[in-house]
Length: 160
Image (cartoon, rainbow, N blue to C red; front, side, top):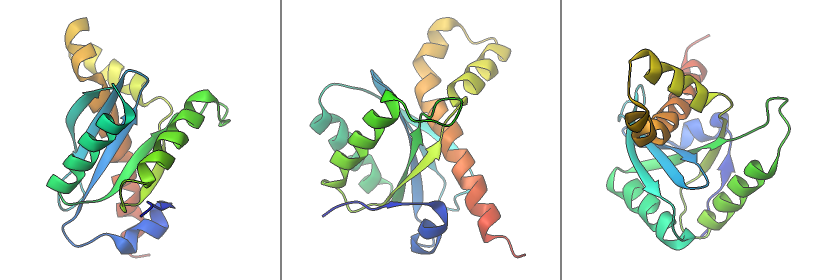
């Protein structure tokens, strides 16, 4: 059992009619999760996992994927602003590689540059307190990442 790493074009024909996608914002201390609706139009913040051990973190992620009949995981890839890969990208790829031994669900990487900054700006505009921002930022960043992938999937499916 090993999860494949696909791009969105490869993933699209493999998604069942009412299967959801889960978005993952992998941080060093937390993992933000978001869930799509069954029509894959809207990403909604789901949960923040406080990172402890890989096995426990992965088990919770897989448990939620099974509970919501998730077809694939959209993993935020923290590229540097110039598009190069740094240590955080390596850590993300290692997490996904390890996760691949535990699930058959495919994974898609999605460029997450500026996702946290965009979400933080939005929360500040909504006058959310610093404490409230800290509480929701990871799962909202996951929703931002997932929404980008959902929008791209919809664009790919549109008739030319």
